[in-house]
Length: 54
Image (cartoon, rainbow, N blue to C red):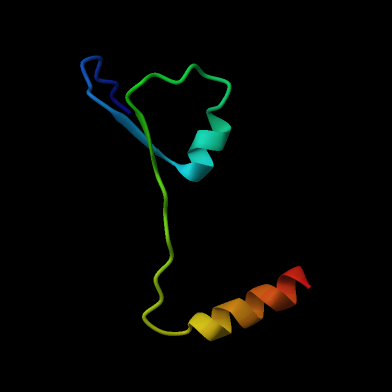
């Protein structure tokens, strides 16, 4: 991974934001929310998830 010192913004996922809370957050720290979009199989996914989580 190459670090660029003159970057204008750092963008992380919501999951990574939680992991990085111990670090100081600069004003150019952006959080990108992620959403799942199903082309097919959405109901099957949630049925399986419900089975696993009980």
